[in-house]
Image (cartoon, rainbow, N blue to C red; front, side, top):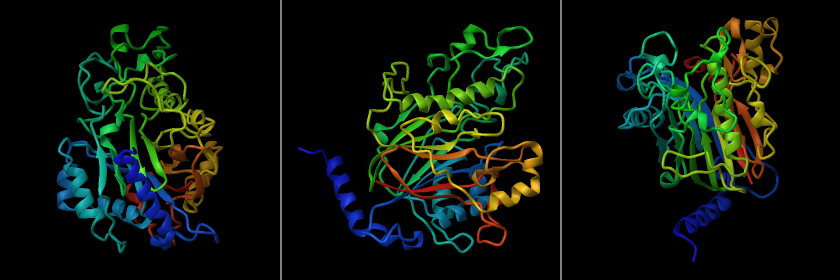
Amino acid sequence: MRSKYAIALHALALVVALAGCASQPERGPVSNGPLQASLRVATYNTSLNDDKGELIARLRAGDANASRIAAVIQHNHPDLVLLNEFDYDAAGEAASLFQHRYLEVSQHGQAPITYPYSYTGPVNTGVPSGMDLDRNGKVGGGEDAWGFGQHPGQYGMLVLSKFPIDGQRARTFQLLKWSAMPGAKSPVDPKSGRDWYPPEVWSQLRLSSKSHWDLPVLTPLGEIHFLVSHPVPPVFDGPENRNGIRNRDEIRLWNEYISGGPAPWLCDDKGACGGLAKGATFIIAGDQNSDPYDGDSTDINQLLSNPRVRSTPLPRSEGGPLLAKQVGGGNIGQQGPDAEDTGDFGPKVGNLHLDYVLPSTDLRILRNGIFWPRPDQEGADWIDATDHHMVWYDLSR
């Protein structure tokens, strides 16, 4: 006998197969053939974080940046979206305020949007480690947290969905030790030639700077594992490159997770070990802080070249190339296509491609894009609320 979960999945797929894209005409027709089920998935680094832990107060008072972020979400209307850098609080008050007072209320002339399902959870940022991780002779502060942050929950993650998220089967990897990963090595201090972290520290360090989540979502395309994370920026360290090495291994966690091989070291926060089942459908999403060509990390290429990942075509924008000319991207030696960049970081760094939606190869990419409008297009006055831009994909079977 089929489970209630399987029956619900079949019913939902049937309803959407009948309705297809007719309920979302603003996305445009997929083809001239029969209507087909599609799913819009997005990732967006919202910069809705606060050094003093005052995001809730800001949202209560009415926050201009939150309004612009909400307008971007309303305009692009994803069915499933990851919000990076959204401060976490245990009661979920910030997430509730953002949904009810911003997303469900028209912002900048956009239609309200409702997400019946959401998921958030604790992250490593701002959580004290009790150790001197930056080796400055003192214990305490953001640099000595398990992940950099001024308070627990800063730079957290929030997933919003129009379809059910199976929270009971969600897997989180907040506590996974970095040293558990095969081949992981402690960064080396080039001055002394010794490991940057003493053995007693290295053995306790957590791999994820925030967390890595595997969220099963019951979608019109079937069950999809939404694999979300936000690796540490590969900067703000020293010649030992401890953040750059951590960034590489945080990205590698997903590469190992989807490999289909045995992974007894990959143990989640409930104690279950192993990677994703062979044949499971997944979408990797998040600000990976890694550009395929430029910047301080190109380690995203390990995912882009994974045979289980559909990595092309990558999304593009019209606004990115225009700003690249203004900040002089070519003058600082950048090699990557300006149209594929997802963030703008000023004239010294330039624009970079950091944010990704990467589906498994059993999903088809109908269309994708980066919401980075030209100055004369709608939304151009919203996007300065964050230095990142929403990446969205329309997917089907």
